[in-house]
Length: 344
Length: 291
Image (cartoon, rainbow over all chains, first blue to last red; front, side, top):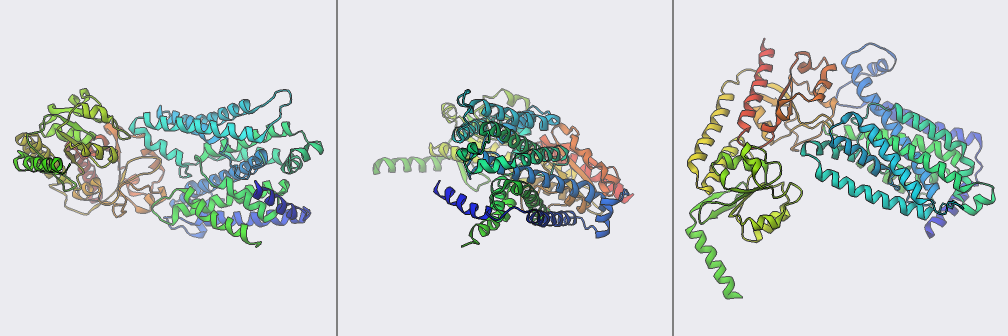
């Protein structure tokens, strides 16, 4: 807790740098350039040799050749899905950290990914591959609803004690964990492989990212509209209340937005770890804790990190595919530690 | 205590000396029994099949979940699955031989060994190792005659399937699963079978038994045929995902084929028939190539 307070104080210092329009534009355009560069690398890397000309043709032309199809049908959808999922997870992580006032909060801490996994695994066990996505989404929303209802303290005061919410979420997540183990034990051998694969989280099968982009748009727009209130909440409930912010109401909206973002990410690519925990912290260290800039910056940075990690996952040990979660950690841990220690 | 230990040691030596049947398992350990095994517990589905082929099926008193072949195996009491064994039930069955493989909860199998139950580990590293396993289990069950016939038939089927594999090697991508995209690597029996059938596994040099590869890597590998292993040789829905990659020879020449995984993915007696199907699929691709 002490380190948390200290962290808040040092970020306070950073926040004193006024959030001018030019600073906002500067940070966001730097991140946008980085993400475009990551896209370019993702489109250019892979087992099949593709000329630069074909990469451009894949994007602007409608002709089809094998190398154009490799870019357009394999690399591009995967890079788009990686960006959307990374952006959703980083945004959800930032929102959860404000909601729970806890630096260890990540998108999965309240059991959303566990609920999604139980939904998806049940569908896989029954052999109904077509409804895996909807089942995962339904599971995520069900889990959110359970935590939401149980964590409400006194209905009169509707005081949302973050600790109570966190504990409820962690216990519900543990319950989902037990059900996942049970499903894996009871499942017929033929289905287990697909189920374990889903649990690991992977972008190889993520070809449709429209839902993820819609969820990303909704989450970002709605949370940016609340950004001033979130700034007040990040300073503590009393400060927020004295500034006229309705903490219980904002908490409900925050919880729902984070749940939507996480559910969309998990439905698209399984539970990829690490991005949602580290990217918001890294951005906070780099640019301060003003949610108006932090939220969009985290989204772009999370998306960029996941594109880079996924491109590395499918190329560094080619023809093997490595688990993308390993790569997000291998790239993210040193970057984060450098950010944390550069001020010393 | 020392006297007790000495007596046990002496007893063990006596049993060893007077053992009527003995065989070396795939771990290189000598398994010796005073009398042919009459109460056998099988801890792997393929081990159950090997025991039936070796003429010892009627002596199996317990089997692991998944022992579904031959049909007579389905009536055997289940003693656990790959995750966990019911050790109490196994001990109650009072087995005189346990046949296992390296993937059934090794820690629990060690406990059975600790109780002095003889354990035979089957893990054939080569195609002929399957036939050898049948012979050795036959020796332990006192049914060497039946086992020798079954082993000879196994070798005969493989011999016929690989009799004519002349001509250029066919590049084969063997697909175990759709998403994730799993194939077989070096040392895998299926890689050896592909080679014996006159093919080359395009990922046959990867040192992992079941590597996950990318769609792009398969396209870049230019397989002449894509063979999917599916239970009952029913065409899996993911096989047609390849149809849009017309430039890959296997797709262009309509050589997306299916073999019965139930036979080929178990190192048991039916591997020979599964391999005959595999050789036929490879022969078809060879015929298209030389046409």
